[in-house]
Image 1 (cartoon, rainbow, N blue to C red):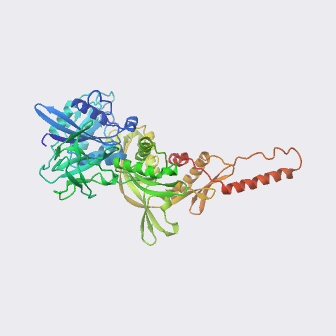
Image 2: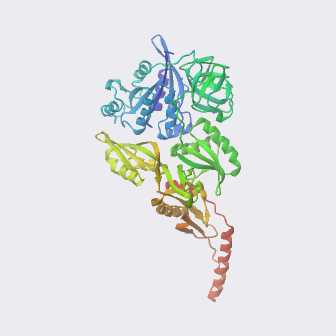
Image 3: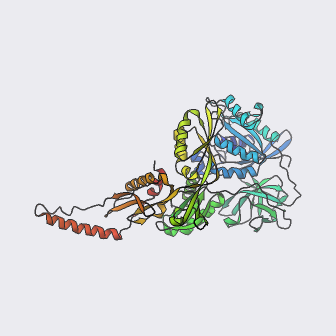
Length: 595
């Protein structure tokens, strides 16, 4: 155990975390030249295309210093704010963390939030200044920021460049000498934390765990603490580039277990594995449940694919424990699922993965957040979907979730960012200058306002410089109304939104105008209306295709033309009563991009 080191890498998105992991694997000879490719731990096509880490990965490296052999277990983490849940799981399984900061960009919002998580778990922090080979690097300024944030000594900061390989030896030395060896008793009852799991279509579910106490053997009879399920560990082992079976693993080790589990719900990430005969007294704590922030409906384009979609989402949920779902139905779209996501990027990734990994074509409804509705009878109802809102006469008041948003930006963009946040009903809480030209602003704002396009706008206003991080800070009372969209008097429930009363008129008008462009013309007039309760606040009409029925009347009495036009009008009216309107998928997505 004294020669084992468990560590993770935490950083803001695009600060060179995956490249640094590549260099560490090369330096320790953990990956052969034939198997090597850039971002070697990012094995999803999506991760390579977007250049981001979506799933955290674990890998064991063997490193020799003199005559001593060390086992280094790296648990890689994502950098985007939507995947901070993955980071919390990795941190719970480690004793140390490499804090990677880009020398040309300095400290960003996500760096700070991940760092606080690591400090809460008492991890040993090793600060690394990456991208030192860049012409735009500002090492002295960024070192000042790190010293101020961490309170460490300047000489403890390791200068490195993951692209050229500079400083990699110093990082390996720091991991061995500064990260503490895992504590734990190999003789105690088995206590292992599941921090991830993946689905293999041949072997069932593979659970990744970190042993805190005790020893695990192949073929052992084990039990999961929370789900109370019992299994035999058919195969256990360590995680190299491929799975490496072992006979035993003991306290401090990171490994995997295959036990032929087929049902996704039976393996909960954050659960504790223990021995059936010699059970540990309590599960491992310090692990929080993921709380979905954004809810949207996923519906199969073909209604017959409903069961297939359920299986696909269940398999995805196994690989991504932060995804939650429950069945729901919609008058416009049929049967589908109400899914909870950690953010909009998370939602986009899930849609992409359903398409690529399971060939599922889905329609996504307008994303929204969950609200607390208090009725006049003093009952509390949680509403995830606008169509679930009780009648307006029964509602006493509605509370919506608020977040504390931290934005770090260059001072020249401060005015535009403040305007954006205030337009989104934000309240300025704090403003701190980190250096002469970098400022951190803290806003309290409704989560519903950032769900649509806040992040995109923030990036475009600040030319990509501003970084953004948030955490929830409770619920506040709000003046909200449900805005419904009616097509020929029929409500389209998938387009309903809960919106602040002050914004409802402008939003309703823009929705109607946008839908007029997107819904194809029919043989009859289509009335598009935005309504709050029984009150219509906006209307647009899509005119019908019309045949020129008067073409054959040249000259003659006007009554002949009128008779033909009246006959056509009756036909159109009859057609309108039986005609149904297909709403294209682009109309559901248009709501997200109204600006």
